[in-house]
Amino acid sequence: MESKIGRAIIKSGLETLYNYSEVDVAIVGAGPSGLTAARYLAERGFKVAVFERRFSFGGGIGPGGNMLPSIVVQEEALPILRDFKVRYSPATDGLYVVDPAELIAKLAAGAIDAGAKILLGVHVDDVIFRGDPPRVAGLLWIWTPVQMSGMHADPLYTVARAVIDATGHDAEVVSVATRKVPELGVQVRGEKSAWSETAEKLVVEHTGRVAPGLYAAGMAVAAVYGLPRMGPIFGGMLLSGKRVAEVVAADLAQEARAAYSV
Ligand code: 48F
Image (cartoon, rainbow, N blue to C red):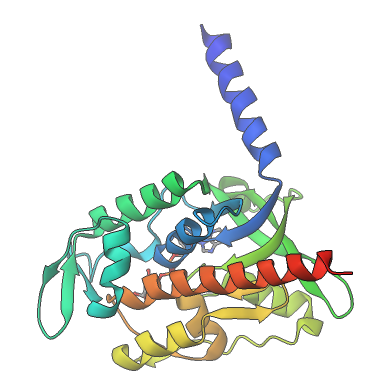
């Protein structure tokens, strides 16, 4: 029995990793923006993998606001909640409250049901780049416990037509790309203190392509462009995830057209 259990896991696990060593879109971070982007890209038919360093998804949703089991979403993002079948109740002035556990579960289920693959326990620590001028062409990942141990092991690759940084406040992917490939011409300015209303709008407006092949969604956008933070209101994260999916889909379609034109 034990050998059968082990073989089933090894065979299927290695096949999955083999299959996802090349994707259309690699999303780093299974928080609200990453999971939303994953669903809207996967349902367009793109091969999508989400790389999450924890053994769970949801990012900053779980702690709610200061660990109270409620978060706030504004009216503009209600269509996204409806797409994911997340329930909400009115609070005040166009604001609605949502149960964080339900939001995490349904965002993840929506992404998975649309066809996205979520890989847990993988830490992304670098990007692949090509060309002059350079473009980001994938990422390097390593098991999180190995990364946390501080022991050096060379990571493995995933080649991608587009990489989305949805890593939250530290914009980890854009930061490493900026530091190691300065020719990308990207600067990470770091987020500002809180101004919720403005932050919610600006983060969606600035969502999109940061450099060729590299995109930012969610709080990573605030970090890259020096925008204010907003606290436990999540509509901007959902709208940013949907927006980055639209931008990436349009760019990949355009690149495919260009590749086939004579
Ligand atoms: O932080 P997170 O929830 O990012 P987000 O989608 O949403 C931000 C909000 O939760 C909240 C806020 C707005 O209301 O201020 O903070 O922008 O999720 C980011 C996910 O990325 C994972 C991390 O564990 C988390 O689940 N992550 C971060 N760096 C890496 C990573 C990395 N290098 N490799 C893999 N996963």
